[in-house]
Amino acid sequence: MNNWSSLVQLFLMDCKSRNLTKPTIRRYGNGLKKLEQHLNTQHLEWFDLTPDLLKHRIIPSMLDETSALRTVNCNLAIIKAFFAFLVAEKQADCNIADGLKPFKIQPSLMHTFTDAHLTRLFTEPDRSTFTGFRNYMMLLILLETGIRLNELTQLQITDVLLEEGMVRVRQGKGRKARMVPIQRIVSHELQLYLLERGTLDTDRLWITLDNRPFDEGGIRSMISRICKTANIQDVQCSCHTFRHTFAKKFLLNGGDIFSLKNILGHSRIETTEMYVELFSRDLQTQHEKFSPLEQIFQEYPSLFAESGVQGE
Image 1: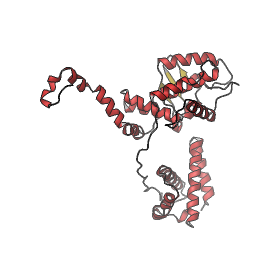
Image 2: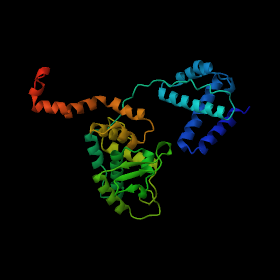
Image 3: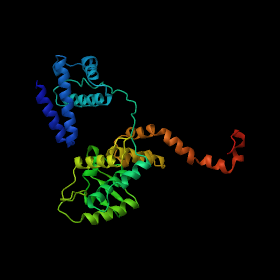
Image 4: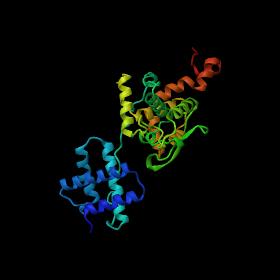
């Protein structure tokens, strides 16, 4: 029987052969290290584990260590994937983690920018300079498309399809490509940015003053700095806040959840439905403004006289 370290290495090599992303493989490795720590604390070997031991000793130990149920759920998914691999490789007779269920998590507060925030953010970069115009352009793209930070970072010139009104995300989450629509204002500004950027050796869309690709850490720092100088203190300032803001505005403006799922690159509709749940009050308020029946009632209250509702 192989020891723990060799099995983990085999599993991670299998993940690599399946072309999983480096962050995913790193997350799997960290999750299995965490499991090993809990096994050591309980004086157990991996082959000693049973469904009962997992449920009544390992999982409670994880819960004692952290109150973040999302973290525990992530580790549960890693454990299930690992033991499924062991079964497939005939290193274990059964997946002892197969019956583990994730903990139900209440939706957390989701930060979004207000129109006032966005106005301050967009006016902050000095568009008379190249870096200022580049930063402004990235903020526009984030709000227009809702793409993730790493997707923004990896955009190339050939991913900007102005005639089609699209931006191509080559490798979204799970290495899935998708097309994301852009509209007239962003298309026009992108044309201007491409002229300013010029022709260079790198195809990356976002570059520094020394013509190198603008990396993820630099973009994250830039957004944090702009938020600070714009004096935005009451929301989390990040690319994901732009993503949440895009989703909220898309729904409030009448966009449907299935289109939103495709634009955001979600693999499961349940992930997209989270936005509907979190913004339910805003959606209700918006519906009150634009309800077709409410508008007809304002013009022809006698049509609904029997309901007992009085017009304003």
